[in-house]
Image (spheres, one colour):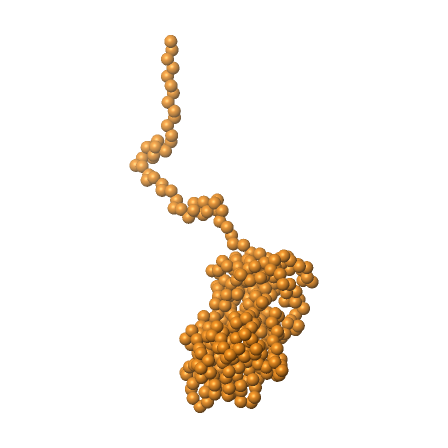
Length: 362
């Protein structure tokens, strides 16, 4: 399974904004529904730091002002009418989580399908359900329970919603790196973030706190294929041209995928995305873009085309180079002080000839 990444979460944000923004929550069901084995239970593994009662109290009666996204995190901004009281409902989809709306098409992840038509509502594995004042029904479903839902209450202090939510206690957004669609780092900042990291470049891109947030497995592979860089290359081994190529590819892949609303059928024909899904973790297969090789990099199944992606290496210091560097860095030998007379100096400087042995004649 590959979890929803920045483009899929951005598509979800747009969807929730379209069907729920400006509407008020008039009903909350915080126990599992849908016919699964945990029906009727509160899933504290998914809905963190809350009980069914506290979750309901933080959401019920509040108006959904807007839907926001940072990296792979979706969060809803809720306000209690005529008061400064706010709530942030933060959602990370994990591998199989999604916010669904009754009567609307479900999101389509590469490896996960949802049933949410009128005859199967609420969906199987629903963790919570919201009823809105216009009759809209929203549900968060997650079959594998890797998703995370957090609700935090706060008072409006005039800061931006992102600044506020990042600063909330135990906020999952607190330490995230910049979002490449909303605030792509400059080339200098991007290069500086890579410069001190010897981990594989793919692992660094997957680290949500390192360079940018929102990049997941398929986006990282696509970025490095577009940039012509092998995923296993140490990040700090990349030359200036490769660093710039990776940065540009991160921005391009994320923006193009978001512009397509994460509909993979609308992705450019030359993208690796259309050929990488082989259900294999090793070996290779021939494709129209070249032979794709599969391996594990950064703990994730990785696809690359070695004939098109250069592998960079860290320079290794040989014994001779270390010796030469040590000699070059050493202080020069001291010169003996000059003597009082040139003749004596010359005498001291020139070696004495060997003594001739005297032969005894019989």
